[in-house]
Image 1 (cartoon, rainbow, N blue to C red):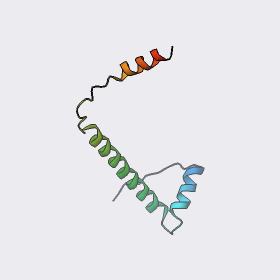
Image 2: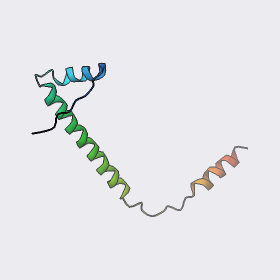
Image 3: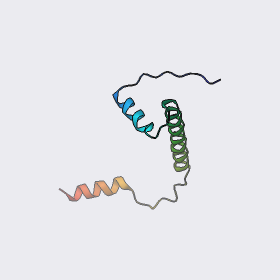
Image 4: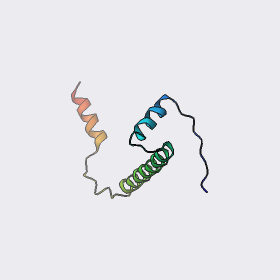
Amino acid sequence: MADTITIRSDIETEHALDILTHDGSSRSAAIRQAVLESAMRKERAAAMRRAVLSMPLGEPDGVNISEEISRSRGDER
């Protein structure tokens, strides 16, 4: 048997539950589905972050950004 979870809802939560149960779903089913979908989104976001962070940076292009900014600011005087 699964554990029972109790939540305290507020106006925003009640509105969201009204939307999620508009199709006749029970509040319990709607909450379960929302928790599962939220977890999947977080897992996908973490996987995308890991993928981006593991991407090769490539070869430097030889441009020193700080020198370019200093040079352009020097021209403004």
